[in-house]
Image 1 (spheres, helix red, strand yellow):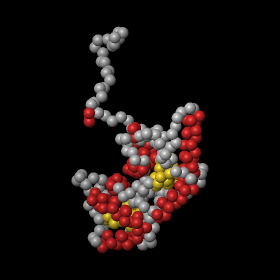
Image 2: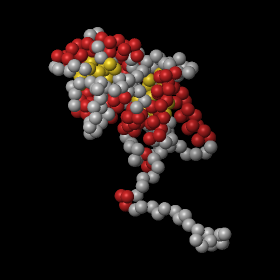
Image 3: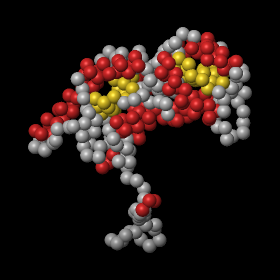
Image 4: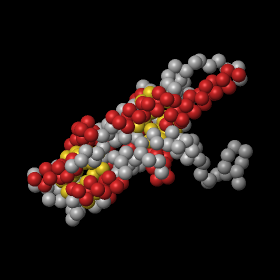
Length: 307
């Protein structure tokens, strides 16, 4: 039985854990700064429930890294119903921001006029695609929103990691070079398939070098949207000694229809891994583009003045 001063003798006493001083001190939970610009994910491709689910999962990953993040999804080919257009989402974001400002002033709060962008638009693209990026810029202009457009997600080492994982999931690469086991179907040459023409191929080649270092096999990039590119690269790899090839889509997913990937794999005569999809690194890179555009980092967000 407990007494007025605490538990009876012999019972354990649960005391609060002391805060660790100095560099061993645990960081405070990080949250998005109040009033920060919204993150708007620009999703290419024909909208579908699968693509929407992929985009929502990417956004969910970003929110888990930065709680309180105002993240939204806009589709380049949306219908403003189940799949809202990018321009519509941006216009709605601006209207909501203005409404919040009016309500704050009506409540007697002294609120400064926001100086930063109302939204930061992050393209859901692994590599550069001038045609798609131009369409995103056009949607921003049509919305009339003060929005900042970031670069695409790659090239980046995290994308090389994601490609490695997708290849290993398909049985086309060893999951870990440090473990001494073999995969009978492991490829000895990788065709890195992207969209966006020659510029996209060059950018994919950078990530391809990182992937080659991980797998210790040659990796060459090819353009899915350039006729004969995948087959030509496959022949080059075979000519240099690779006997068992694999196609690794350097795509999040919505950028190209699955039929295009299937046709490319058939043309090259090789098996294919899945697209990157909602691999955790995609959500983290989306958030990184957002925080970089605002000049903040996850460790600094709590001290950032509202925009």
